[in-house]
Amino acid sequence: MGRDLPWRRSRDPYAIWISEIMLQQTQVKTVLPYFDRWMALFPTVAVLAAADQQQVLKAWEGLGYYSRARNLHRTAQVLVQAFGGQFPKELDPVLKLPGIGRTTAGGILSAAFNLPVPILDGNVKRVIARLVALEVPPGEAIDRLWGISERLVPKDRGRDFNQAFMDLGATVCTPKHPDCPSCPWRTDCQAYAQGVQTQVPKAVVRSPLPHKRIAVLMAVNGAGEVLIIQRPQAGLLAGLWDFPRWRVGR
Ligand code: SF4
Image 1 (cartoon, helix red, strand yellow):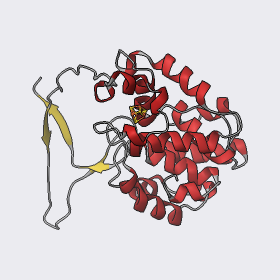
Image 2 (cartoon, rainbow, N blue to C red; image 1 turned 180 degrees about the horizontal axis):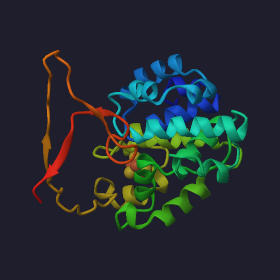
Image 3 (tube, rainbow, N blue to C red; image 1 turned 180 degrees about the vertical axis):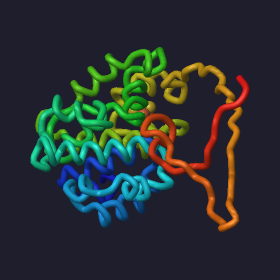
């Protein structure tokens, strides 16, 4: 039995696309209220395309990674202008839309149209890495992992398979405590056979985080008005209103 999520009750590519973008860097339980509010505010791609950018960014407030909201807005305008408001059913045009990569495209095309298009999100990468007892971090074997995901997805069950694949990673083949005795793939899983399931996938050795010193100006005039400026349309928090700030020192 898969997870019961509001976007899974829908076959509307618009609703599925919105959920896929929200889920890119955010957990399901955080996305749920945002998704409901978004669909009430912007129920169709045409309404989203016609909205003001500040209204779109406001609806996204708190979800982070605001480039996702700006890309949703731009893509809605592209869909209305170039595709008659319909979501394309082929992979190539979907991959050309702003903010949609291969996994997101696979998630939308399989869930909305039941197409056998593979996905490779974090959960799926972990499951595949364990199935084959991958000896390197997944980032060093991306082409191989895509190839396996592509071979696994059945031609006539793209929707069910991809959703089950993600659910397996989210609920059974979890990062720290995989529940192998309950897993339907345990007889095919090389990591389980070797007893190394918690050591796979291999971690990447990360370089230390850079430190920056930032000065922030907070100015209030006699009328109680606060000075804020709109940030540029590219880079961190693009298009949002903020106190003036700049980098100091090295
Ligand atoms: S047997 Fe264990 S490690 Fe292998 S896919 Fe299943 S849950 Fe993951």
